[in-house]
Length: 427
Image (tube, rainbow, N blue to C red; front, side):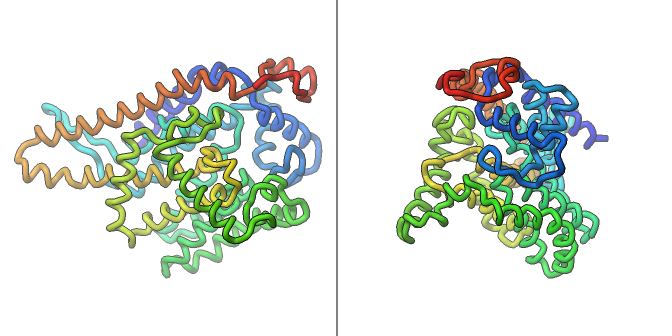
């Protein structure tokens, strides 16, 4: 019953965060969203295609979902954006379920005669839900929330499989990972995470066979399609394929990208107004401190399988953007799947606080100081959430009026079959 109560609260808060002024922020439309409409409609009444070279080349899984949404809700802006929003809500639930398994401790304090217990996983889900980096991409039609949903589903099943060595969960984990391969381009290497984790533990190596059995049928068809039709964006932007750069040049770009992405998190964020309030770091100062503290605490837990899992996940989420041309960096869209790993290391800091409660109670011989510390801790997280929401709904709101450059109504574009010309929008 308690877990059900937490889930209801999280769904309620996710819906408010994502759907508040849903049709007003962003008020305009992005050219990519219009391209997505054209692509989804091109799939209608045709045999299934796993990849299409249309609109710079895309795997089609997400666009079949868009097409289904159009058939259910009609061809309108709501139907275009609602799938990303739904997956944004579901991602908050997956974060709670995952970290409720990873962190079993509860933050506890007594206020008069009442004892308050709050699981670390629930607190982390609250941080995730109110993180501007997270809910921004759930408010328009980009594919990032869908990719994160698939990866979180795979991770949840992987953790369940590790705990009980359950073949069914391994199979579901493989299905989610295979579907992630068919989603947004940065998800193409995610399937390596469960594979590596299953291999690390000798007891679970036998499960690799079942993982591959479930995963490969989803991966192989797209690999074959990409061999015949390489994605233009990957070919144009991947520095490893750039013949004009020697080894030293590629190494310099790699170092630049590493620096830019570290700065993106703590100092200077993405300058794209669709991705971020230009220049603002991805994390506010409070979460940055928790992240740094959590990472330092976690260095003592390198043998922990979850530390290995989320450290590898962090690296896999960075790799796609590290090996692209520097003009596209920093990029909070391509690095969107960094968020769960960041939440994990923040959770390490919170877990450290909760696990120290019993020590404080013995040493201080009173709950007053303990309660004061916990109340201050909750106030910090509340300030962090308020800061994120205020930044988006007060400041980034104004930026989206210009970064979403197509200033014609969806119905107006619909009448012209969504064919854009330069005179229809302004920068």
